[in-house]
Image (tube, rainbow, N blue to C red):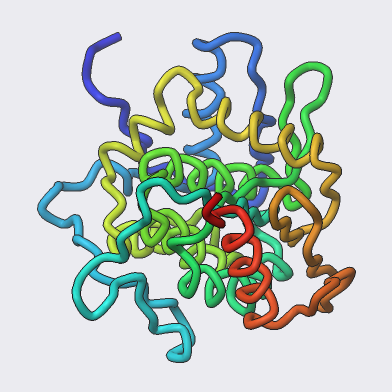
Length: 273
C-alpha cells in the first residue's frame, strides 16, 4: 500500500464478463469492490487529469439540443438567493440509464429549474434496491449504479451550485446509453467544471460513493417512489414520466405548470406575518 491516489486503470469492460455486484460489508471491502467495479465498467483513468484542463462554467449549455442552450446566470451575474427565504422542495427521482429520466429532465425539470432556481431546494434522488446482504441493485445493471454514483458525487461536491451538479447529470443522461464511458464522463465533467480530483476522492474514499447511493435509494423507497422519472414538489407527488408518457400530473405536465406551482408555494411559504 502507498499513499498515492488510486488510479482507476485502463482496463475496459468486456462483454464476455459480468461486472461485480456492489456490496458494503465494511469500508475496506467496499473500497476494493468499487475499484474493481470501476475497472470492469471501463471507466478508465479519466478521473486523474491535470487541473489545468478543468473548465470554469459560465452557463449551462444543454447538450444535443440548441433549445436548451440556457443559463443560470442573469445579465448582471449569478442569481442571488434571498437570505431568509424558505425554498420549496423540488425533487426528481430517476435512474441514470433510463430514457424516461432523460425526457423528464430535458422537457420539464431543467427548463423549470432554470426559471425558479432561486425559489427551490432542488434534489436528485435515485431508484434501486438494497438487498439484505447490502448488495445495491440497479434496474439497468451495475453500470447504471456507477452513473448514479457519479451524479451523487457531483451533487455532494457542488450541493450549493445547481448549475454544476444538475448540468453534469443532465449532460450524461442525454447520452445515457454511453454511461459510464470515459469520453462521456470526461466531456460532461469538463463542460460543467467538475473537479476531477474531488470526484476521484468521492469515488474512492472508503466507499463514500456507495454510501451516497444507498442513502439515495432508501430515500426514494421511503417516499414510495417506483417509477423513473417521478417529480415530487413540496414532498408530494407532482408528476410521473413512465413508458414515454406523462402520468398522474395533477396541475399539468408543462414547464409553465410546474413553474406556476412553485411560485405559488414559494409565495405562501414566505408571506410576511
